[in-house]
Image (cartoon, rainbow, N blue to C red; front, side, top):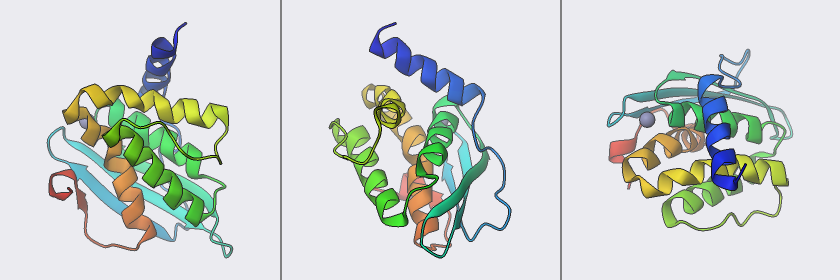
Length: 156
Ligand code: ZN
């Protein structure tokens, strides 16, 4: 299996069987996001502990395979990380997707990097970039306690 096939497998797997697709009990951060171009909707839930570590991360929503796979992979990756590391991760991911960069973070395992890079295929399809980034923008909103719903058409 080459890298491209591995990436496709990962997206299909997470798109069909999203991990953490539920509402977190006792969440203390949440935000909603909407991608009107595709119809993707997500509601992200986080439970941070007193040390600002993500104890639980989950999402509810519906949409295309890319948006569901992205939310699934994202919630898996942020669990157990500190908020500052999560912010770094979001920045790194968004730059990788939008500017076709490699990931810069040194804090990720090879397995985590592979999961993130599986979403890099959308770089060739500008419409799908919004599907892949929706949950990440929404996560930022949740961390920053923003109350307005994220709308991918109103982001730059
Ligand atoms: Zn979509």
